[in-house]
Image (cartoon, rainbow, N blue to C red; front, side):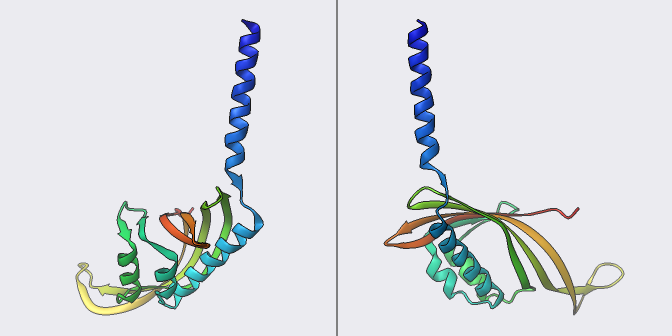
Length: 167
């Protein structure tokens, strides 16, 4: 009985070690590629240029935001062209990590943004007066993105982000 338990323990330990080796901290090449793509996506967002998103996002891409809203590739691209009241002026990518599964990778990072918001003025009873004022906000977001490598190119297939509370 003791031998059977020892053999079972050895098998389980070997199995767990094999699974742990499948998901490795990224190779430096994969991390560099995905960091460059992430940087390119943010640079394009600041310029309201949807061409990078059109190239990087898979046709089946889905994104979930901090409110639980779901967007598709087409919805994201339309947002680039929408008349927006929030313009991201500067950003910084922090705590960038990649878990590499070969042709699939999971990216996690924190984005610190400095945003210019055009906010409608309201009167003393909170009615919109029609005019706008500009407010600058510093925000941080946590992003998790899933990529798949197909035909030698990384394509983002899913994304989730949440705001990090100030404090």
